[in-house]
Image 1 (cartoon, one colour):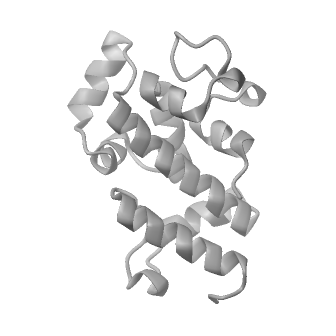
Image 2: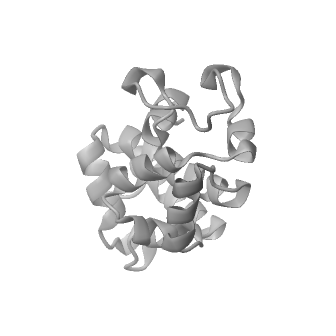
Image 3: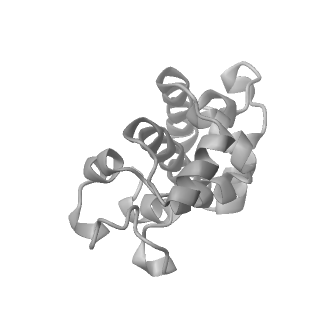
Length: 152
């Protein structure tokens, strides 16, 4: 199973990377549940961390989250967190990234796998399916099969 530390690192809310917390309201991410982090809203810094991990532009990640780049720029300017819906989607992307990193034992290999078309996903790249819960489930099931040697 995906380690919480790895997941928080990808979101940029781990003390080990010296990054800021999900929102300025939180004083200690380790004492907050992940659902509390999502409900309060992940920060634009977390958005950027995930964009960097996946090697996506802000516009591309905005599209995956179901919002516009203009909205992201406005939130950054106003120093506001993402809403709960966008935070949940961003968290989902980070969770899949952490699982892929665990399966492939390398951030570079995981990122490459997430961006390449995959025959196990009917030719779609995993990142293209992460905009829906059903697509995310397909990707995580494929990662589980790879991890346990069912899919080659």
